[in-house]
Structure formats: structure tokens, C-alpha cells
Length: 177
Image (cartoon, rainbow, N blue to C red; front, side, top):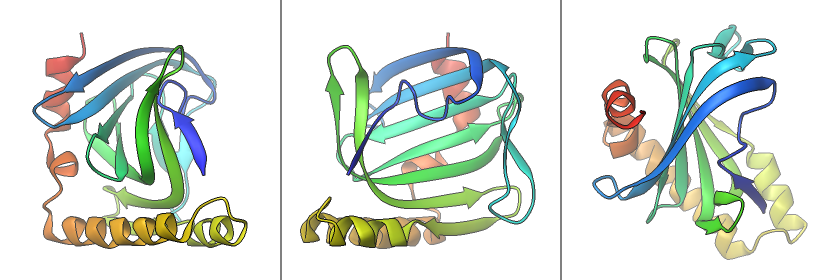
């Protein structure tokens, strides 16, 4: 299992950024908002076969870490705060480590939702399987990852996930000072 800290996820190449972290009792989650002020080169993904810029100067990253779910939702937004893409990490749990901040224990399995091309993809099933074979995760954690995946795919299809459906632009404007 990989422990990831929200203070340094997706910050490769970013020279300067503003970050705000807070607890949201209404959504029952922790939230982190990052605004990119300076980056060595735009972060462009090609996982859909098309180039999509996820991060460059003026862009935002909004991360929701629900307290009672086994996933975290990362939202990439452009400089107009329009949603470009979602990256959902399926996780074992969350916590706060003194001196390092918020973290989640990544269970390898991921979902991306490309808003530009209206495409949902599942990633890293091979990594999850290898983690089980290498005893990096238990069979229960393996099953948890797939149960969470099924739940999320159903919510995505039904358009019922509270974090994906949140008005991200309004959320940033309200909470990012």
C-alpha cells in the first residue's frame, strides 16, 4: 500500500502554488484546494489518446477526502474554474500525520473521468493484483478496492456522487481565500 500526502500530490514541476486545507462538516470530508502560480511546463495527459492540459499557471486542483468512504476525489479545473477531469483514488483509509498533514493509503485502483471527451476509465488493476500477490495488501483490502470500484462506477453512471456533483467553481470561490 502506498501512503500519499495531500501536501505533495501532483506537484511535480510546480514552482509556486497556494494551498488551503480545511475540514468540511457539510460534505463530511477534508478538502484541499491548490492554485498553480508557476509551473515549469504544463502537465498534459494523453491517457484518452488526446492531449488534455490538466495543470498550468492559473489552474486549480481541488481534492475531497471523504471521512467515511474508501476513495478520494481530485478535480482538475482550468483558470476559469471549469472542470477538466476527475481522478479518483480508491483508498484503504485516511489520517493526519503530525508535521506532514493529511494522507490516504492508496489501494492502487483508480478511476479517471475525462470531462472533455466524456470518458470514464479504470486504471491500475494490474498494480492491485500485484500488490495482493506480493502481500503488500490483504485479500480483504483487495476486495474492498473492487467493492468501492463497483460502487463508484454505479454512482458515476447514475450521476449520484456528492463529490463529483458538487459545484466546484462555487466551492473554490467560497472557501479559497
